[in-house]
Length: 342
Image (cartoon, rainbow, N blue to C red; front, side):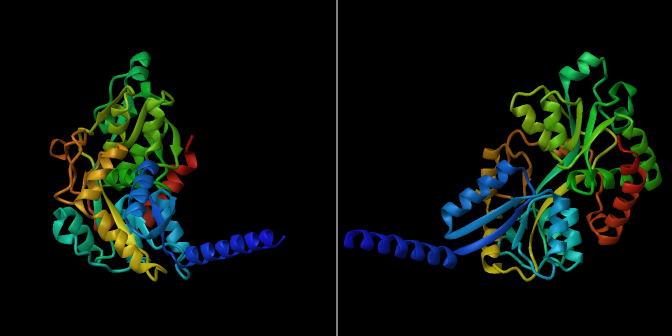
């Protein structure tokens, strides 16, 4: 009986010590707005090399911004990694994120540093990629549809019900597409184009990469996405061809921001500096991530789209990442496109 009592005491004491150890462990609350495979690889590698427990939630860029805004008075998130730069810039403008100048800035490409400078160092570029689409070659062949090489080609009646694109309210990818078309065509012309495109759209997804994953599975013909997301499906062996629009296209600067008044700001800075290192960014290819890394010394995946061969527009990140412009475009999309969406 005494042995049983002693055993129970040891177990109880061990449980209490374990609970105390957990309570005293360094913690980090992370929002990750990239593909979940990338998010998990980063978290696992970080935890293996740091005495910090990471609690990660995967959210699209629009969802992440909405979460930070909802938590503004009592932040539960410490750092936001990945996703398009526009909502990161909006969060900076709205005072939701804090200034931090990483010692790694000197190693980054000019476009990543410019992202930091334009936000008052409240965000920074972590990767870049151009907008385009991926199409299922088998589906288009069966339908007798021509391969779409330009934005105008997506209006072909042969593609009716064969296009997927995300909702720009939840997806940074889709907001980049919206802002790109506005900058290419002018706002009224862009919305006239989107109304015509709606005739061919089967679904507006929540996630930005979902459309090309559906195309890879044979569920739709074309997915409007960032080109690297289409490349990842092609590399997996799916019959997906990757397109950079002939008229020109926008691009993203995937970004990272520390939340203003974060509970674990010191741990957030450890993560921030770590993910900007070349050896960390070189890991992303292992998760089939084919974006261009922001550190000049990081390894660029050989499959990554060559942006020198893509006709890029002079994307105005400051304007289209501003609270006023972004809100106005999304409200107009809701009125004129979302209201008639199939």
